[in-house]
Length: 260
Image (cartoon, rainbow, N blue to C red; front, side, top):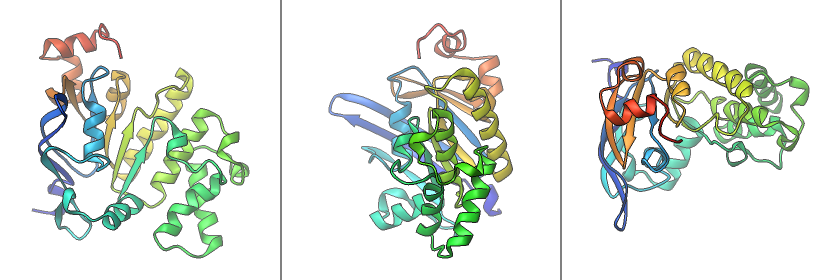
């Protein structure tokens, strides 16, 4: 079996509870390279808790998350030290926040935001770093002339595209996205989604995306997991689930009866 046939990310019986309150329970799935998984459900369904568990921002109270490193060895993420986890985030992983200000350094220039991540993986030549930053700004449709501007001067859509460039510049294998189009105007959302879809396909990224917007899930994901009250109640190929939902709750979601 080749590396590509082995899961990149694996979860087994993953759960999180806060005292008597349940975050999520008994979540198990595999994610493969180049695959985009959407996690959907109404507010409070557990999808954001699950994303935090997968991305090691939160420790599970049950189960485990494993990741196949670049050397082919699969590691239980709970066994990683803080330095190893930070290294993963600088190299193999990216995290796109709903609020781009959380994923950017707002006090440095756009170019520095992209270049910092390259320096964190050992790049030293200023000219080479700046050239790569310029290239990535172009790829996310930001004018190169804005490279020295502060993200404070950028629109919401531009900040989100800058956050994407910052995450992708080190050629990661896995990206976590938390409502990446939330809070943006419809026209800005459409442009961002088109950009994301093209970059994900071009780079062969594995992506876990949390969204309440089923249109976003349909456009970006290959597979979908529907969550309700902390549990996965339906999963399958995106078009299959959205066109012919099995569970009544999913049918309601598809009919847009439930609030986001």
